[in-house]
Length: 64
Image (cartoon, rainbow, N blue to C red; front, side, top):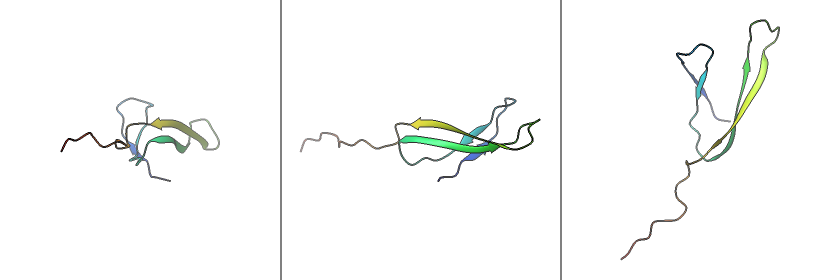
């Protein structure tokens, strides 16, 4: 489990989060929200894919 941090938004109803994810892959942001009019907090999650974090597997071709 890695921490995610809330970052402010200038748009009403938009909530931004930031996380420093170390590797490519499928990740999930899990959170609990208190919504107006709801008696209990509601759990939710967002699943997303991270690409481009891994270094190149092949070293570049070099000539001696």
